Image (cartoon, rainbow, N blue to C red; front, top):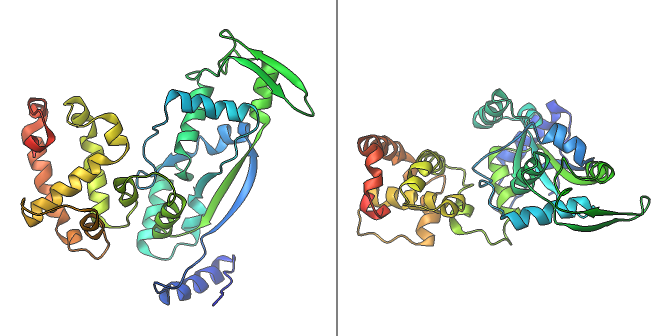
Length: 313
């Protein structure tokens, strides 16, 4: 069955509501969006400044310095091929039906966020760092094809955004990039978009589960975010383990053992069930959150005395 979603707000609400009421596991709905080409200058001056990451989708930037240099190099020679995937928050709010979706998008607007980053946080962060002169481009000769047809020499004295050749900087800012704007999706559909985009990527199970649309996932993510600095300082977790969501996986396991007993096994299959929206975990996770807050407050800075996370547990 093919259903055309009318973009007029009134008809769109009505049509979408009918669709959502009849969805089954074998029925799929469109996520409305459009792909546009914009200059690097416009992206930096507009979209980049109004964007933020939802940690449910994007991990904190984790590119190495060499990866960042390679991306800027691609932007300079107009070979930035991958799309930036952003959510138009106001547009999604305008067509939201469910209370949780309305609260979700309104909450971001209240924070001054106009666009959510579903994919491309590393690229967005790298552009910010380059424009703020925190990244140096590789030294060498940069050939820019037609209509410019020029070679720009970059040395150690002209390899930052501020010091690079003015014409090369103008070419960089004028080069076009592809941005896909999602303007009609629910919070749950955004999770689906993230999972589909990363189905072929080397995400670990913790990163995949992180976008699950459940109370359990949200509470675990919040606890892990609040505790991450303390765990890094105490050397119970490394920064890469936190960026790759392994700390979230550990807290999820702790929660599971807290409920079911310490003799229970924790497998990939168990993790997936524990994060599902209809799992029993969603009913008891508030108790875990309350007890964990009390425990972490009790230990406070003495966390540094623990030499392993399981001793802390």
